[in-house]
Length: 119
Length: 108
Image 1: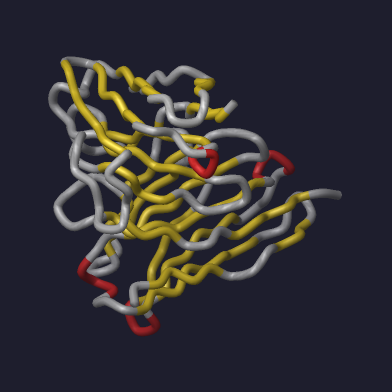
Image 2: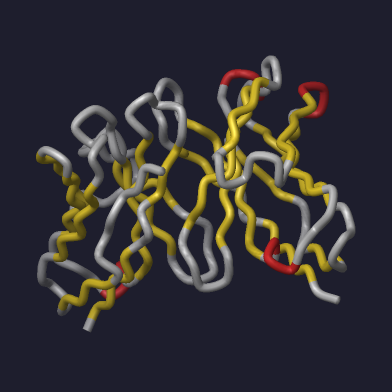
């Protein structure tokens, strides 16, 4: 069974760093791209960026370029989303999702990681 | 930046047909897909390549495309279909993913 299992909820203070994870199982990690999607409380889905785990080639949404870093570790079939200095406005649910083969769609989603940034 | 436009809300009675539109200038060039997100849950892929349905998705969900608009149609709406629905596509160069703003479907 294909699964994307995300790390647990986080509560952080402004200025702190954070790295959340997305562990893949049930298929070859390097065969599909992995994307990250933000959903702020009560709001819609926002695409943040996407990574090809095979060579870590990454494309960021212009809205998130320079704000976050997306990475992947092939050895443990895990993708990451990280911040170097969190802001209160980063408080949101973050989803990882598998991009379908040969198409710009996300066919399998993680359960989401809630990030709360508050002083 | 490229945008996809959806109506914020649609309301229908059980058994009726709901139609949710999504407009974007690159839709004639790029396929669209649709996701259903129920409260407190992750999105689920409903329709891809404008009108294809993944296995396990009920036949009452269908998609269509005409020019710069794609439409999600839910026939014989059931109470369990109450959710937020998002269209998603890519910009004309297929570089960036774009989501529509989402439509809240209310089953009266």
